[in-house]
Image (tube, rainbow, N blue to C red; front, top):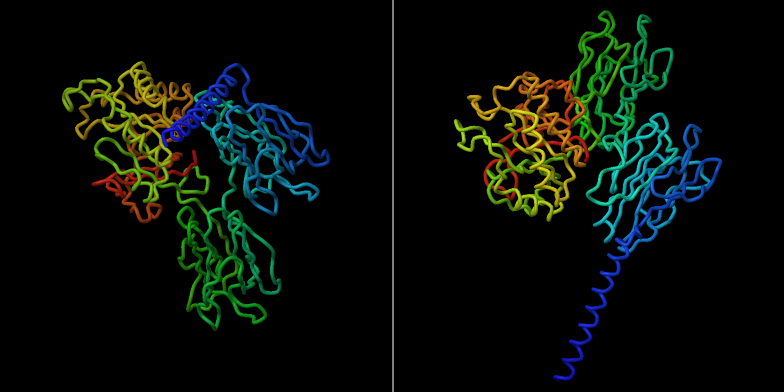
Length: 547
């Protein structure tokens, strides 16, 4: 038994030494100057397969109006192990499944355009490198760089991809260029068709175009309403009030409401959205009525037209409008922002509660002797390391914020440097924000008396330093503070995280959106929210952009 045990131990020892040796060889192989590279070839309209190019070179064509139809991508000289995977969005097909390691994505011989692409690394190489890629799209030209599985290209426009560039970039180093807008999503549009006395079906109208007739005394008899580029899901529903019939049952998504061949007039209509669609869009419509003319715009199920007056509906205009003016990618993400006030958080429970992202406070500058006794010193949040480590452990994407009380641009840079030093060893995928607001309700904080110009320069100084370090800078502030204490026009190049408590509920926050008229990508809608894994209240946020 003893001799057998020695042999087993010796075998495991030899295996361990072999594994360790291979790891050392792999690392030395990489750092000796043999770095992995990415090669790719595209199938182009009228050209067929091009030769492989590599490491950021252009595959495809520009200014020739030729579509990409297929692509093959591979990693060469990979000492780490792992794969490169990619999926394409193809005309008339949609998103295909991911393929990997030089397999073809797309089609050949079918004259179908590529419209978008996603590329990602898997396995050990993903611990060392990010994969960046950008596309040249019809009517858009070169879009910004996407990375690590993000969508690049467009949807809902029927635009072709014409060229692509792909690069491997070591983690912790800067992106090859701008990363703000790699993907363009067409807004959802209302399309509709009216059946008119003496004319019949007119043909498609969309987004506030007039269907029906005016000044001819022709009745509308039926209508079909549908959606284009409905990337959110949900439907458009409508019902009509018909002469001698009254209100008909609800129709949806292109079905006919009203009658044909019966010479019966439409007198009124109601239109509404449901599902995820109604969380982001309003449907607005107005009717042109016999003896009245155009009525005022109605929306979201309100009645347009008349009942009981025997007046015909002669024309209609319908449009979808965003509930607010935020930059949106079609997916509303739900998040929280936390600091040491939340105590010990059970991040596993937070994940199970459906939280999509978390903004974590890294620290703050003391407000001043009058409020906290710290007198302008920078202090790390007591829960920062715990929160970021455990949030990332549960694969919750995280961003960072620092509560600023900087009085000068140099102090703002100091706050940014502190933040960068604290987060440099963590995977930060969401923005790094400067929190600019009054320190307390009495406005006695050390920076509370700054001018609009001074505060604006402080935000710029912080954000530019964050940007230089390779992170996405962001400004957090309240609606009133933004309007009265910052020059938002000068800060428009930075994403805005807006705090505005409208009475929105956690169950349906988009029911009461902010009326702030500027652009913002994140919205803190309450400070009395809840989440599993957190005792007491927590700030709740919505993000309209996938970072």
